[in-house]
Length: 275
Length: 284
Ligand SMILES: Nc1ncnc2c1ncn2[C@@H]1O[C@H](COP(=O)(O)OP(=O)(O)OP(=O)(O)O)[C@@H](O)[C@H]1O
Ligand SMILES: [Mg+2]
Image (cartoon, rainbow over all chains, first blue to last red; front, top):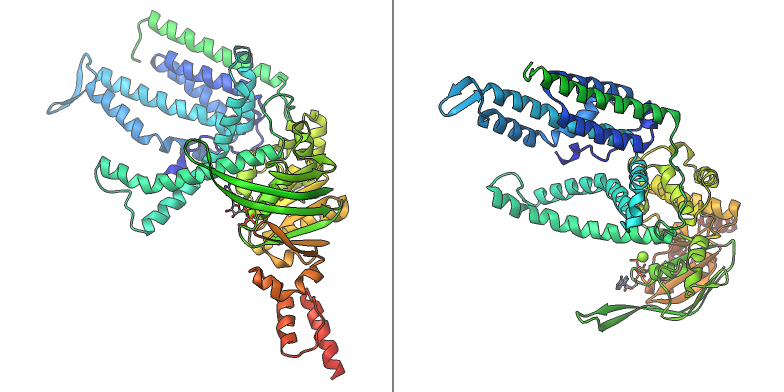
């Protein structure tokens, strides 16, 4: 189950999306997420779907791989849907069973909420799958660069993120291993109430933390041995320069955003909220 | 290349107030002289202070007493720190915990980036180093998908890209299978032969020591034996006292000697033993 989290897993392929400047991808993801909250009515979601679909197509990452990230949020998704479905009051009731009822508005909100969540994950997965964590943090470092003047340790934050991203798969694998070892010794992670389950996590978390700290220690030493001494005087193997395709991508993304806003206005203008 | 005089180091355990509670002497008055271009092996039982010594060569630790010079630079001099670390690279035991990049080539570029090498030059060095360890075709791969031996070779390339004159390898093969082990050792030997890089190899595997130019044996923080592999391994009894193995051929020759077979001392390789036995047989 834990292995399904695709966040931070780079999928190597040769595509336009892979080649884009990480800053473009970061900004795009941000715009896309904002646009999901701007989106209104079926038209808005249609535009978002087309945009996301096109980007996924261009990224050449298999769709099955992309949706792996969704498995991690299935629970969250179901809870959101159920709450919205049953708890929102609407104009007319579509279905009733005892005290449970589904209204038109509830159904609509539930569906849109689910779509919004799914797109959110898919959108960020596209970014993490097509960008190496190093590129990603390089992009972030450069985007946030101006904050350095306010004494925000931008380089350090970016370095921490990139290391975290590199170690996520390793630690997940280790969690799996420890879990199996503890199960073999009779540990039970599946049954019991919440408190029992939380207690069962202790023999998992303690070795995991110990090993994580040892790794951190080793890594810090290895980095120092390779002359790492913060961001000062450091050069870049892959410095970021915008290319023509990056400018084009920005144009497309902002175009998409403007379109989303236009759709929102026109739908509210005609008061066509639902279909 | 590396010279130590009276090198001593203590690990201190501090109590809650920060006072020294106990001291453990991990390296004890070590004198070393390692010439450039040599292949050096350091042997020793667990806890004999090999890693502690290795960390001094890279200035990760600085001596409590005595002095260590790397290429004439005293490791205690703060302003020489980065020069020393560039000059004497280090490869550690666990391949997973020393690879920083998420793509092979990015990891190899990490060292030169820290040194402030210009971008074009970084790319050149990355290519050369990956080529030197035979990992060029994996440059775009994720390190997580490589075998242990391949990861260690990437780690060696990462050090090579800093253009060091000396590489310290601290049990680089301890977590590898026999194939990975062979590939790593062969890489180190090739770098030593072809690029003239001084190699200091710390290991538990005797077969890896046989080809070395010079061997140091450590016990309880001291250098207790040194010499060519032949000189060191001819002292089977002493090595056993230090809880160390000897190569299989050496051990067999030693046992045969004890039973009265007239074999010379210091046989290291299987082929040598076979040759000697054949010679004896033809004399009979
Ligand atoms: N960080 C530390 N803090 C306290 N004591 C330490 C530390 N690291 C090592 N020691 C002690 O110092 C001594 C020498 O350790 P060192 O790691 O140098 O040995 P080693 O020869 O590398 O052993 P191994 O073959 O197990 O790697 C050991 O007795 C060890 O317990
Ligand atoms: Mg050690």
